[in-house]
Image (cartoon, rainbow, N blue to C red):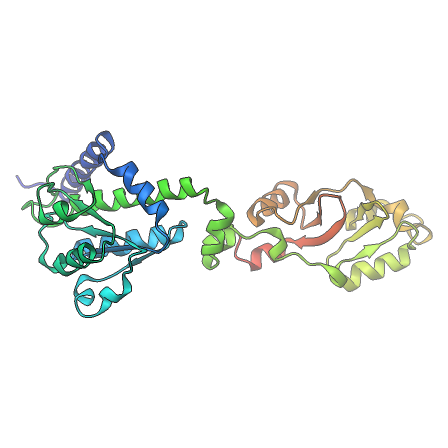
Length: 317
C-alpha cells in the first residue's frame, strides 16, 4: 500500500530533522574561523549559489544584513556578465553548492582567487573544486535528500539555510547586536511596531495637559477638556507630583469647584519611561485598565504622555 500524504510528510521531516541533528552534533571544523573572518571583513559578505542554492543564498544574505552583518546576494550568471565588479577585496564571499562542482560558480571562484577575496565554501564534498579553492570550508553532512527519488534539493537546502542562520546569530551575538539595533533595521510592519519606543509616539510639549498645585479646578477641567486626554498632570518644581483623572473628579464631586488641582489629584501616579518598548507600555495599560500613562525622565520630570490609541495607531495590539 502506498503511503498517505501525512506519512510522506512525517518521513520528509524526520529525514531533514536527522540531518539538522547531524549538523549540530558535528559542526563544521571551520565554523569558528568563518565567524572570525566575517567579523573582520570591512566590506560586505557576498553570498551566491545557483538554482535552489541561489534562493538559499538570498535568504542567508538577507538574514545577515538584518542582524548587523552587511551582506548582499549576487547571482552567479549575472556575476559572469559584469556583476563581479560588485565584489571587492574588502569583501568575503560565501559560495553554496551541494556538489561543489556547479559550473556557473567557476567565474566567481576564479575572481576570488585572482584578487585574493576570502572565499568560504558551503558544500557536501570536501574534495570538490569549490572546497579545494576555498579558504574555509563549511561542510554539509552526508545526509540523503528527502524526496522520493533522492535528487531534488530538500535536505541539503534545509541544512544549508539552518547553517546560514547559525552563522548570522553567532555574528549577531559577537557584535553585541541588540533589540534597538534590530529595530533600526526593521521600522516597517508589525515587527517594527513591536520594537518602537514610547518616545516615538508619545505627546509632549504644548500637547501636555499640565496643571499646578494651586490651579483652580475650573481651569483644570478646561485643561482636561481642551487637551483631549481625559486627564491632567500635576507638576511642581520637583517634577511630576500627581494626576487627575475622571475617577478623581467623581470622588471629589462635593465642592469640586471650590478646590485646587493639588487637593484633588492622586499622588504617585503610575508612569513609564521614554525608552520603554511600546509593547511593554501597552501591557501595563491593559493590566491596570488605564488608557493613559504619563512619561517621566530619570529625574521624574514629566516629558510626555502616552494614550492607548497612540499604541494602537502604531500597530501594537
